[in-house]
Image (cartoon, rainbow, N blue to C red; front, side, top):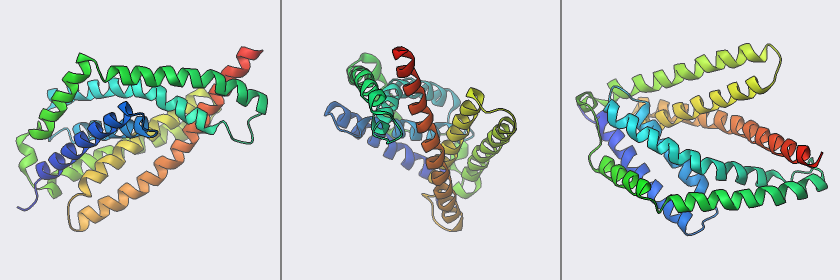
Length: 250
């Protein structure tokens, strides 16, 4: 039979649990990229557990995904502030606005990062860390995961790609009307679906042969689209931040 679906999924889970531990250690040490690295790894873990529902125990996956999402939201505030602060040097931002924004958002970033670091010392996070270690050691996979990866994992990727297609259609429908907040929300929804499909494809790309090569190509295409959508999302964050600063000064 060769490589099983469980082989690739288990390897992904082990790698991502280890990567999260490294990112969290870097966060404690004050590493400049730690928040970003931790968020990315949290999302990869959630994809490992969620994009192949026939292969992962549903109850265990749902519990871990919810707890990973909660940790990601806490990190998300700090990361959004990092993005905004990093974009303030854009020449299109007036100097007076830039100065006011940097003062306001640096203080908020310091507080958000401190909150994330403090969370690492909580009993709640200790339980999550222990449960992730157990998951890496004994992945909560179904009997179906014992089948060939070439038969089972592509189902999850097809499901992920169909989600992208549905959200693309929704975005196109909205774009045909008047742009606004609903369009921003739809674009963000597409971005999340693209990211999930990319991570699913990367699990398949761990295999060998033509299916793995095609999955790697798919992951690369989705990564490029994710970058484009991410840049648009970052511009939206900056615009909203500047509007907030301007409104305060009005």
